[in-house]
Length: 252
Length: 235
Image 1 (cartoon, one colour):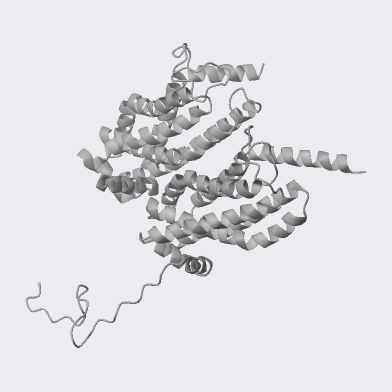
Image 2 (cartoon, each protein chain N blue to C red; image 1 turned 90 degrees about the vertical axis):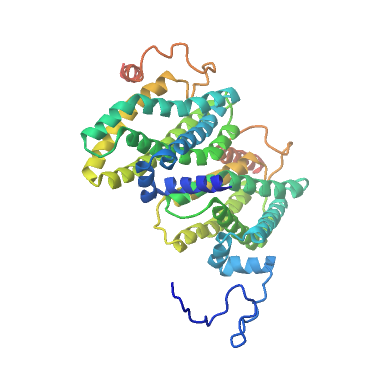
């Protein structure tokens, strides 16, 4: 202990005004976390946003990211619904939102454990924040792709084609969106192990199966949800076979 | 709140394989050794995962397997406890009987964390695949078997790697760590397979009735059955 401490040249954190010679600068005005700013951060400075999400003060940001996810998937669903029309305008957006919410919720525990296995020093709250931010980026990319999908939905008559296109867009958006997870790992200076790659494969499989469990997302059906349970590969194969049979029938 | 924070921190240490923390648990006594924490983690993680395995068949089967799967782990550790402790002494690892048990519990707790964290997905699989009796049930049963086998193998390999890390640090000798790991694994696999056989059905054939234990639970053994199956295949 120094018995004669020199007077501090810095204001104490508690004193708002500091001393007369060194007045404390006024606090920076808090920039409100608007949706537009979040969109901007997600696209331009995702790591800065991730730092904010991981810092713990996440309430407002996560809520707004969830709004972005819901809006983006609803819009993507609406454009998908153009192909079939009718009740799909309501059900396709709702199913897409429900699908991504359930997929995120059921894979969150494994993302947390796999991140720990990877050596990341994270909490489940921060992992949830990173997942939400990643899915928001996926949603934004899907919004960017909706005009392209709209053009094809207006003119296409082939359900498998539109399904494959939607799948292609989904894969591309996921590849960019989930890369945030790896960037987080790199930011945490953790060595890259295969655990997060495995988790990404798991997440993709879950979302693909979810699209089959909530079918039809594109075509029409007598019931809102399927009455028959199917594995997604079996479903795709059945749809492609059915479509090729119908094409043969209509050929002159 | 503090307990929740401690539990999450301990789970993180287990999953990360945070060797200083795990070594401290191994050498500490009383509540610092985290014995109860490991037991509860195994019970919870493996129990929930077991329930997801059985749910495809029926909710009753989910309950049965949710109880039986952790029992297989605890019974195997209990039956092998003496010999595992002795091997640790013979190989001069410096591990006492209690520490041997704790090291294995930590490894199984890491296993439980992995399978437990995946159980929401496997629960979804059980709900979403064609059920027994529905068209495509045989394929669904096969794909469930394959997925669970792959998942258990993955979690087992990762948990073993964590145990190896602990042993390497604790013994300070890579060769001794490998020997003890090999001996423990061999013993646990040998006994675990038989305990699992006695407590069958685990995956359960869709053609057989749902039961907690088979009426002939104690007749025959796992290795006789494997031998019989091999002989039948080459006839």
